[in-house]
Image (cartoon, rainbow, N blue to C red):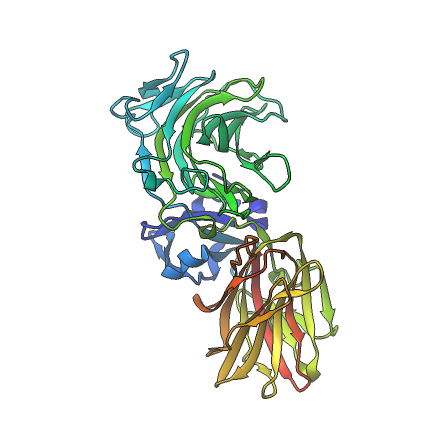
Length: 529
């Protein structure tokens, strides 16, 4: 899957990390970076914090630490270009992929379809053939006119069925697919042909769809049913993604929301790159009991056939649910490396309290220096519109140049709801021979909850914040977590925050003691929902 350089710059690249695999190879050779001119380099600017990154055979290899599975993500920042003059800076997000037990691996090499599959093929056009083989000796020829294979997602003893509506809490498919050449194109507004469906007979909770284009290429999108409270059921689509020429490895992870929440979602991968995702689905009471593969035109759409091979169907692993996955739609990242603060909505406070310069660099060439001289406050603000019930942030912090009075605390970060109330805060003070951090949240009723002060020795650190609103009455299950250098140091759980969504953030020196001096160094801010 090739991504244009402008897409690489603007969006993080998602790669799956699967439990049970000891390492994940970052195949950056898939990225179209405009060739490799003489003297250009690909260099790691920011290392991951929940795993290790090494090189082997000219490739980057990531090995997740145990903390990765709790947070659900990690990231690496790369720069490409002449040393120190990066033409392209991009983030690779390492995301927890679904790693549940496999329910089925096709038996096409037998070659046979039964008894593994239930066949839905009125015209008898489905067939195994060497011409469709994409791995091994045989693959499946899927005709354009309404035929497919059906398999129960929930198998074995009833104890294996754990969804609220019966069935699994989630699952998905991995297939290798090759669209045919020369097929009849669909209109731009076409909803395409269903090639994968999961849910129950007659009601697909999750789908993969294909459609052809006038230029001869093929596009894929994922869809999901959403049941928002007091509203009619609706089907949501991801953006259409153009498939690369020839065979492509397709992966769809999908999961149901816990009862009473809207945390269901899906993620679509093409050749191990995350290309689309949906979150915020209210599907907690829907059944996930069947999975189907084939070609079923929607409405009056033109049919579309293709070759299929290497089919894996799987269910969510033990303990995997909506909380195990980060949809990872990037909100924004700082623009410090460009020499300014253009990524932010506004700079507030003292006009000379903030400066982007090499003195603030904790990653790359430039970072933010927030002067505390004379108790001056200066911070950056950014709207999160639309407001979000899920928020994650990561940044680098060095308080070593700061001088705070005894007992004086400095607010470094705040996330507020639309009414302007700060719902998530990070405070800093000096004590115990170094820096101390405290996590603060406010519940729906106005109660302020504080973590204990956590001592953090040394100078520069990677700080991460994770916040999720509660599911809703009667469940108080909101949470907030603080991570420093890959270790979780504070957590507030059981929060009554179901009425909250975060609408705006502030970052810098928000509240400064009058006798403060020196400066705070901040860099490499990233955020996602």
